Length: 460
Image (cartoon, rainbow, N blue to C red; front, top):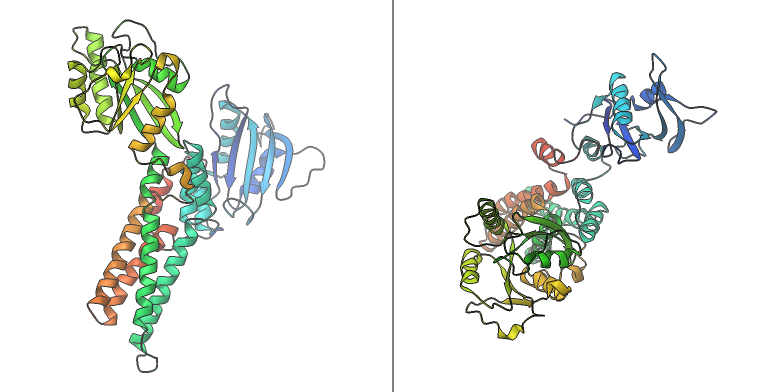
């Protein structure tokens, strides 16, 4: 049973990242019935400042017994129900750093608050009806967004652009179920069920479910990003390619083969998709112990990548070593990058393998990077992501529930086609209704809530 607001303990947590000598402001947040009382105990407001909701007060945090000054702060008051959690919420805006915020948090705990669990502020917002489950997940996705487009999709979810169509679909299913059950209970008093209309409504619901389900792969790509490994022989220009692409000197570049001894990483955004680029050590047989470790790490990075940029030297053309490396990565999507075309014409390069995507670059002169990015988007079939302007993109949990709803709706259609009694219709209709309710939180178990909110940071 869900607790009422009055029954819940007051919780407290640091709501901002605490980094020594980095943050200028640190926020300690409280939510609960005694939040305002704790604030009055700890906060000394000079002058005649009014303690009203949604007001910012200036003053000092003092130890309640010794009156020792702890910090100079701003106090933000947000009284229920006009707050993030729909409970009384207090925020102390302290000086940044480790000591001030930890001291203020400790005083709050000594006054009866308890340390919040991960995501507990957002959980209370959900339990108190301020947001639904899709909006709660969107908050976590917004905090962890790795690209502007991922941020926009999270904001769309926070505004209810996913919840609204899901609720509409669930309402339609509930209406169909009510019609069917009415015919079961009051068959003699009601006109016959319009089966053709029911079929059309189910087909429309199923089509919309499939449309939303189709956004799962795009959503996952925008959230988690793509891991791309640059592989090839030593001295083909892999590090130069990374430097040109990232517009930085992340990797050391020399004319000596084997300069890169470890995997160098850089994070970029291409077409709205976050990309983790791995510049690997040149793969070759070697007796150097350190280089041998680097080569093995390169092979491991290649195995874990989503996409391979197999880089070769236009001057040397396709070599036996290139063919051996290709054999190790050909089970993955591969783009052939013919580098150093400023030193040799690319049309002279002959390669005996079938690689669909081929890009020519002169990394040392920053040439060919745009073509490389276009090839990457095309190779993962996401070239339309940026142009599609997606409003919604579901996550894995939502996709699982929608898949269950889709299966249940298809079973209802099968039941109707097989001319089974109306009682059989209701079984899978209820299954679809429950699955759709799990997405927004109308039907959700405690274990699901624990799994969702445990991924949040403590202060959110």
